[in-house]
Length: 455
Image 1 (tube, rainbow, N blue to C red):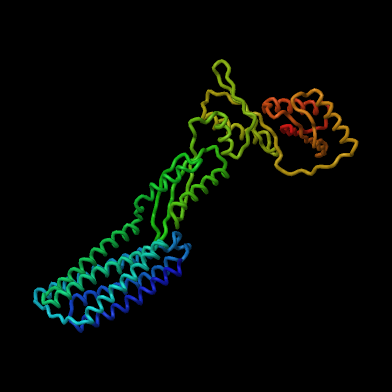
Image 2 (cartoon, rainbow, N blue to C red):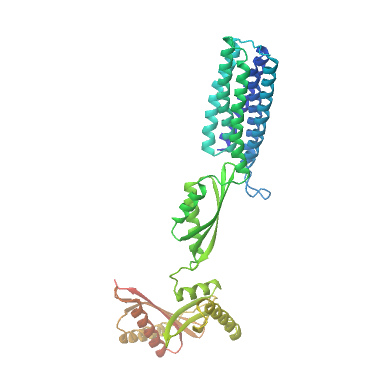
């Protein structure tokens, strides 16, 4: 795309140079104010085309430390300079035309090459305008769009000059001079349009309708609750889009990142060549339960809670839960962490709620386990099978693994339950099994029972 932009811009420079030289020569030879005004207009186009070539080269440079938003606005600066040149040229043409009208100096030599240079100019302008417009649409280049606008205005202004020459040829004196004023009007009109659009870009005016497109697109993304603070600023051929989205505060960082990624992808499908930055803010849902609140607050402090129970007695609410903390902490350190968590929970759900925290000691480091003798493993397996005689809901123990960790034993096993059995019943049976095993084998530190649906 960058090579295509520079190629079409370079071809415009050569086209403008050729037309400027031809029109000045013919304008001086014929004395036509209309052709001279067209020559000045083409000279302006030459300067504009040169600026465009320079602008597209600079704007395609990637962002760096000094220009974190890239170099895209160089195209807008180029277009602003072109606008100033348009107005200066128009002022000069109008001044010369009025001077001729006052002095009644309407002498113009109408020749075949005067007509030829204008007709050739119209053909070249049509060709360049189409080529520039096509590449401008493909690349989103404002500088090329401005250049295309120049050549497009040249077509109409050349047509005005052509009509003026025809009228002079048929003896209507002054028509050429008035045609020059007509050219200036076209130039001013083009300059006004280009200038307004350029100033909008430099003032970071959001392109019409883009904000609504971003909002409607993002709000359709699953997981997005709200969309706020949408900021859109054009950066040459691209756009910088910044917004804030509300997301359930209970979501994990991974889940939040997934939602942000989907939102960016959705915007990119609607608006190409966009640099998108999305901020997130946590939102408390209206249907958030007390259990959700406790887990969210614990997660915020990088803590883990489980076995949360909420009950009510004599119009008073009680909440109990297990809080996992590293076993390396002292009792005082663990108590301080638990108290801090309790205070924050009560500040959100009410101080009248009574909290009970059971602190679980957890180990974060990996431990080396050891193999047991075969007869020891058989002994443990037999005890497990006997324990299952007192269990009804879960059955078929398999994948039994017994290993030693220090002076203690660690047991893991799988068992089956009916597919339609409730999780609560299966969990209660698994807990009962664990108690039976620990009662028979005093050296056991932990038993992990994995319940799966029977085949």
